[in-house]
Length: 589
Image 1 (cartoon, helix red, strand yellow):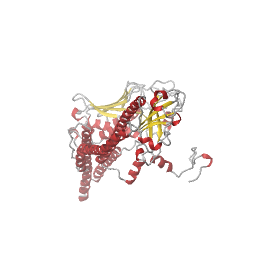
Image 2 (image 1 turned 180 degrees about the vertical axis):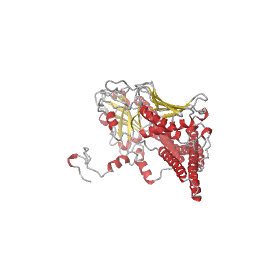
Image 3 (image 1 turned 45 degrees about the horizontal axis):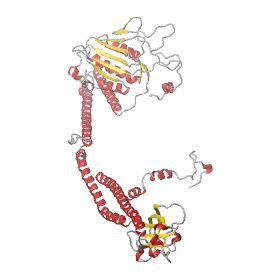
Image 4 (image 1 turned 30 degrees about the vertical axis):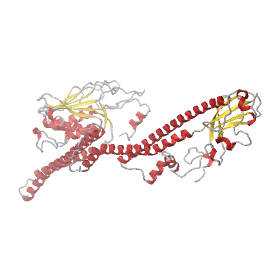
């Protein structure tokens, strides 16, 4: 242990003590948190470990403290009560001695030990217990002296030396309280005659308060408490043990039943006790957890089976085509064989990518690099692409509602594009004549950005509004695995929306009105003014108006614009604050 120069710790903190090795002070402080007996018991590993034993030990400890405190209080009250009674008797004895001495000479035993003393310590009378302390006619206790007041019933404490004589056994080596009364010598004429006591002198009567009666009563009580307190403590500990054992019996049953649950068969359930207490709530919670585990295991098995089935179909088609072409090479249409093989390979590749994406989403992987994306601009680009691909049947239209309103969201562009592509692919598979994609901003500022994809197909029954988002789910109308998709598009779209703080739902539509999917995404911060305040929309270019609406019908623009305007950066520099620095940080995603 080295001294710290200049009273400063190497870590920079000021200190007035030497520098201890690292961790020493922390261990010392931690060691003082518990009383020394508890630390010793813990170090010796003698404290009980089971809940029943700990509960019984705690109850016994509390009962011992409570009973001991009550016993000490009872003992103290009994001692004080008996001592007060002895003091009252001693005070009455002072009156009796003064009255008796005024009429006759007294001596010998007279209740409690006493002594009658005149001026200069002249002994007038005393009890046999004080005779060993009196020598040559002089009293052991001091005389009253001359002059001053005549106190009555005053009390003082005196210590009696230890002597070997049996008569003084009750006083030897003890410090006792006396009750005294002082009167003029003329008040005791019969006692002062022939003792050389002047007529103007004083006489004092001492009566000792000997607590033998109080000590005997306390001793009898102690003998009873020595037996009663341990028995009562043991009784409380036993009751606590039995009560805890009975209370933990359902917990033990829950533990035994839960131990039999396996990952492959989590169908066991624990019995919920009829107690309506914390144990019953624990059983309900465990059953709910087991239910979720069973559902997760079932979903995992179904997912693996569905994935294997989805992968087997294109593989079987690919293998069959190649085997037929290989068996009859002269008759095979090799361009068609290669085209079919490429088509099935692309299907396998797309399915594999979707499975990997779902695995990353299930693992909670963070989204890719996020940035501000104009949802209207992205939707316009995709509508043009899908309109060209569809060739006008069905029509793909885009409607940007509320011209001039910012439709910027803060998201990963790739994830956002995948959501829209999955929704458009699903709509095109079911649409008859038209698919309408709408981008709008909620009127409640600062409201989210809404994107709807609506088709005029057969629609989705209300009972299937949630099941359609489950993985590998196909409704009856699109059950074929060649044209019906993989059944993962909507599930991926909902998971991606949730990862960006959004929500994807199926809106309730009248029967035969098609399906309408609604995507809600939190609005991004499109622009920041010079004062740091958020602007409601993009500022217009110099001499131009705001963002105009545009409807594309089958890829042909309506109006003067060919596509929604791209997002424009704000020309006002942002204020240098933590939020602005975070927007500019390359690690914000």
